[in-house]
Image (cartoon, rainbow, N blue to C red; front, side, top):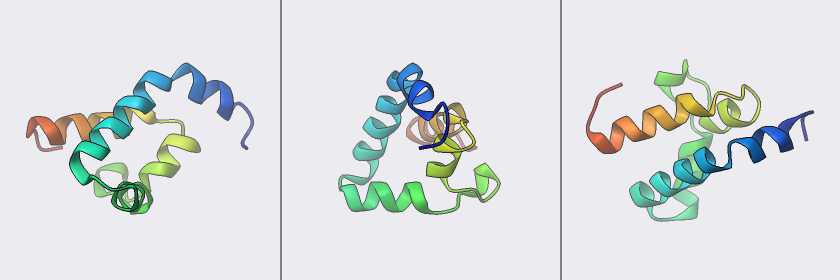
Length: 75
């Protein structure tokens, strides 16, 4: 586990919970959720959301994309 990742995830648990809540509302299955997390996303500079969350530590960027999507706001 990358150094400091546990603390980062602990400090941002509410955001991570919101990300997964939205993803499961949108996609319904674990497979589809994890497919989305592992697929490069154009609004993240073609980075994978899971990498943005875990390695780049930019959870807010992923959360913003998802919240905009459910609100119907284009990114």
